Image (cartoon, rainbow, N blue to C red):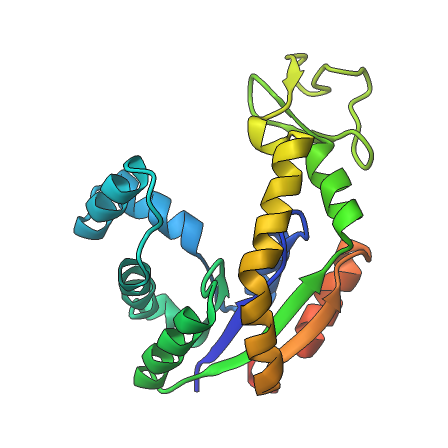
Length: 219
């Protein structure tokens, strides 16, 4: 029976990093809705063309289009044992649609790990991020600073801060996440599927806690 995991966590919680590690450890496929959008747009699929046009208008991608993309990905052979979903669902309505879809594949949402990190730490993590212009090497002013301020250790190019990582933008992204996702968190908590994970720990400890939260057949 396939195992389906919905991984929740605010920007800066390390969700993408952990999803990659857990996918490798379990053999489950990591499905990021953002990556799926980019892949479909790049490959100019019918769904990709729809999404591209919607995003260019500045609109939100409708649920039915997102769900069609997720459904198409889950039908591929590498998802036979299940998947870790990252970035979908975002609302209780999407969660209900996901339940219906997974039932068709003979599965259900088994567990919803929620990586929790204090808001102040999230802001520090994200607003401290600097990237080199030459090859995109990533530094953090607090946890991984360059040897020389403003210069990449590896290629000597200038470090700059993306607009997304500027403090005021970061604060807004985090606020929007909590406003939008709070109903989904409560939805899964009410179903008894939510498992709180302390995301302020070392990466290896967060991974260990995530693996413990998974059902036996995924380990």
